[in-house]
Image (cartoon, rainbow, N blue to C red; front, side, top):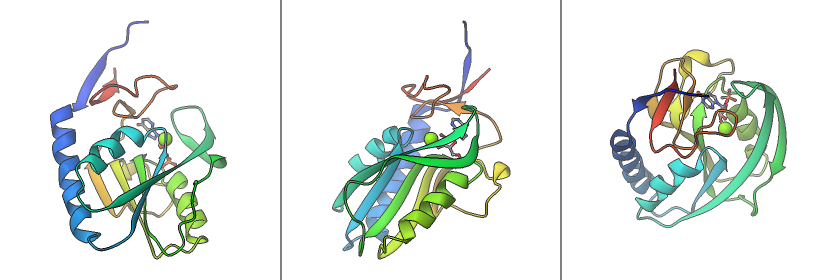
Amino acid sequence: MEVNIKTLIDQETLEKRIAEMAAELDRVYAGKELRIVGILKGSVYFLCELTKRMTIPVTLDFLSISSYGNGVSSTGVIRFNKDLDDPIDGMDVILAEDIMDTGRTLSYLVDVMKTRNPASLRVITLLDKPSRRVVQIEPWMTGFTIPDKFVVGYGLDYAQQYRNLPYIGVID
Ligand code: IMP
Ligand code: MG
């Protein structure tokens, strides 16, 4: 099948903004014990670019969940596939996502992570589609606010495809 993918945010623009986010994290979390928790698999490309550019000490952990849906949007029914490797009590924790859409995934994960007593807990996302929100949650830091379009690339998939595109695109 021929698919046409139109660039929405090019690589240079993505990486410039991610560098700004890294600098902001360096500033805000200086002297803290920062743990960044990536939500698999979509956040991986974003987190590589982000953490390479940070200069303060930071440790990483990952979790993986499935939200039962049709591949295009989540339903809110969530299952843990992989939990964190290490406890987060007393740590300054950031949950990192590729995109916030309805907000269901992150609102669920924030509730779960809060029960583990981190010193602080914030949410960052590379992309945000606020027009789609059904749960009241706002990221503490966002890379780009985008319109209500289904996007792929830079970690984001459609049926597991296109994650490795070096830009954010819209399937035509
Ligand atoms: P939420 O729970 O509705 O906020 O959904 C977040 C998850 O839905 C993301 O981690 C993605 O896996 C998926 N998602 C939402 N919008 C898009 C999109 O435009 N492209 C690819 N995946 C998306
Ligand atoms: Mg995802």
